[in-house]
Amino acid sequence: MMRSSRVILLLAASMLVAAELVSMSLLLRGIGENQARRTSAALDRALLLMPQIAEWTRAQARSEGATISAPWIEPFDRLSVLSPTSLDLGEADRRRLEGGELVVVSRVSDRVVKVLGRVQTDHGPTTFALTERSTDDSRPATDRVLIAQHALILLCALAGLVLAALGRAPLDTEEDSAPALHAYEEAMSRLRLRDDERVAAFEREKSALAEVLRDREAMARAGELTAGIVHEMGNSLAAIVMQAEFAAKSSDERSRAAGAAVIEEARFAREAMASFVDFIRTNAVQHLEFELGKLVGRVVARESAHRPAQVAIEGAPTMVSGDEDLLERAIENVVRNACQAVGETGRVGVKFGSDATHAFVIVDDNGPGIKNPERALRPFESSRPGGLGLGLPLALKILNLHQGTLHIGENVRGGGCQVVCKWPKSA
Image (cartoon, rainbow, N blue to C red; front, side, top):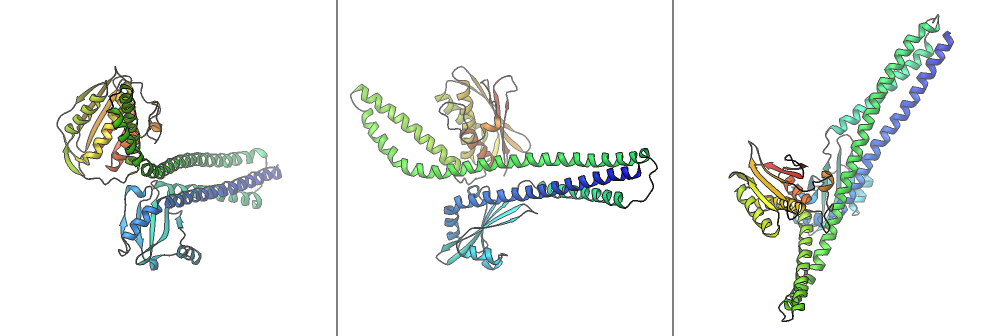
């Protein structure tokens, strides 16, 4: 009986040691692969930004230590001009940097990715650095906890293996060894259960990060396409509109109708290009005080002139701070989206005001509602035929520039949709 119980303990401990070694290796490999994907994505985004980076670096060539944080470098947090002597690089990376390649420096411990490069200026080669820090500050701590937990389980398993192999205390019966074995297995089972929960959370976070990276890469590609489209199509549209205006002034009714139709289509094309440009443009936010009620009144007046929906305003005069032009564009996109959703017989309500710290504009409607709010805030996702899918994403971007939020939910009055725009009412 004693030999049988010891053999069972040895087998159980050996299997647990092997399982934990495999789990530890998979965890470390997963952390490494995640960091490698993040590094590769940072390099790809840096390559897309090189024209703007080169222009800014040449302008700052003599300003060693110059730093900028702007929306056009997103998702990077900072762009800096560095001194070559301040770089802590290996010989291979230094040769690559001197040869004109981009060098990625990645530290898993603090979740920082830095992309280094050189730009030729009138004053010689100038070194720049793009820095991206993970927004999830709890991530390094989570990784360390997971590694520590696996190490603890491994140590317990090794201790059990050693005790089972070297133990000399007599075991008179199988019943005497059963309670100890049961307690050991129960403790290991609890530790493994906690470990499985943490690994599942890790996988969810990794999937969410991959989805964010896909959205950002889509926006970067849209930026490249937009620059080419605006350059190539701007002059062509102007020429088309000029010829259509001549046709619209013709004495022939069919020619006038055709000219008016061409002008309308050209207007739509211009609005589409303007929406693309607005979405990728670097917006410098100006924090000036203005009256929120007047802004909402202008937006509702414009939309009421072009849409048959009934729009009601509720609110008192409210002084807030922010970039009035940008915020007006954001609120207009939200109100227009609601008016388009409700159609000719629908109702749209616009409520505005402020609390102790934030200003808000709430737009609700009795339309069909938005089934997937997260998808509606992604660029180029539109359920409306012919829609570009940039109205709500542009509004979200403007509110983010103001450290604000945009929340989409169900209309509390029953049916339809409610969109809450909120931002700090003072800088």
